[in-house]
Length: 363
Ligand code: T4K
Image (cartoon, rainbow, N blue to C red; front, top):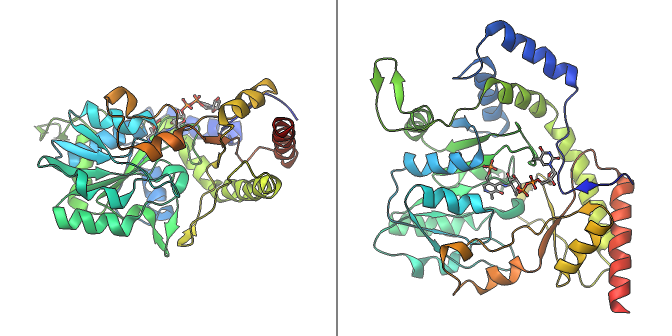
């Protein structure tokens, strides 16, 4: 086993393929602002993700901020504290107040049965996160949103290509946002996307990501710079070409991990929910009460698993009550290395180290 092994590693396309695309960019001298590769990537992603309205952005955090602006949200937003800090930062950077709803321990996602009683007079939206690719309870969330006139933005940073009941997960809610960071299954180094279920909202998103500029003569609103560069988009087109191969490799390693760790009673391995009809195998997430010691032990052996998500996101925003499940999960949840270029042998070695660790602590 070659160490260090990190939690994530982008499977890079052949360098020459990228150089070939760079040559085209060099010839055109168009480096950004809806160039050839940005448009190509947008069209290819629409097909792959089965959506009509998709806008690529320069990262997944800006994608959430633009989504908030596109839906003209104000006041407070009900969200989950068990997420990457970006979800909460985006809400706060838009000047809105996050209200933290506890999670369902079985999924790690927002507990839809606890949303209603948190709705306040100024609440305008719900921002759930499909944590580690596990879909939220989208049907219940839809009912609540309809009943109270709330908008729904799913932070779908972990659910590239996931489908439930034969439908794209991103087709639920008003908007889904994605991250194409280098550590993600589908990546453009830095990047993201916003998928919406309305042509009008998509038009507004496209204006917002380009300073609100409609034409050289017309600025329609106060926007921001949320555009993806041609270099990132060109990389993305190459990564997308091989995405199904990457998913297949991860799938095999995912089940190898599951099989090898199944006989350790101290570890809970991931289960794919029954209504998931397409899964992306982005993360191998486990739960164990020995999380902190295990992460340190693996690090001593050169394996850098991560305590996703720790610390809990509500901490720096002040709220610590009524989120007991989220706090509990944040103390036991971790992610093991998983990516296409990881070898079967590496996974076996990582599992051997985990077995030895638990044998020792059991005495
Ligand atoms: N919402 C959710 C639910 C998210 O999870 C995220 C991002 C966002 C929103 C925001 O999306 P972006 O604005 O980031 O597009 C990483 C990623 O930086 C972050 O994108 C991701 N979630 C989060 C779950 O993981 P860190 O701080 O753990 O990353 P880092 O740099 O420690 O990388 C982890 C390992 O990956 C490294 O030890 C080595 C490897 N790596 C990393 C990079 C950057 C590579 O092999 N190559 C690389 O280029 O946050």
